[in-house]
Image (cartoon, one colour):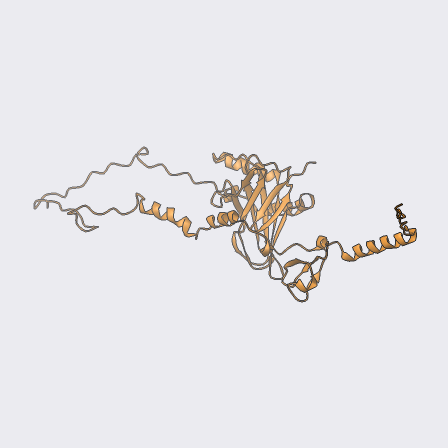
Length: 314
């Protein structure tokens, strides 16, 4: 007869040993940290951020290791800039050769361009030949009819300018105060550094009273507006250059005001360009009629971006 081997009996680990193994596994997981399987994250002295697998792969010396959830915001110059955004910015530059082509063609075909003289004509500025009057004849005077109002060319209507609002110094100060106080209820602030500190701070806010006044002024000039109005106040903390290069986006609508059109953007006090420390530029932007300021609006200025509700409910 064939002998059947006995089944081996495997001893079960004791409950205390199982608990020790589980505790050791938890300790190992905690030591690994929140960054995951052996990854190390941190910041280099130049402001760049790294995520590597080993300490030997850290790309800089004197780095600071930081957990992924507590890494400070990345430096603005390292933010990605899409190609379409760069093309858009270049097309706004008046010194871009691309923008000078059409202007040159328009100047060449303008009716004001000098026309070539016809064959046989004398030099420019020479009087046409005329028959000399006979000796002793009285001088002849050319009859000139007075210009009639119908014959006079109508004067072109001057476009509306922000200065036509006639805001006093007290009204300008009130608008600046409205923009600053609105930050408590509807914060909308953009800052651009200049060296170690902020170079210019831009605040945005809505003023229903100013919006109504601007709409009335443009309507009286025969150029009615339809969209909501947003005020901006740029405060220079140091000598900087400021341009209201603002873009607003909400849903499928993106709006970049034309700096040459007062119906889209205008400066009420101060100027765009070089600002000395302490100077202020106050202006407005007229947004498209579909914009709802009670809903979030993405606001871009240079390479900065914020999302703000400029007219919160209640």
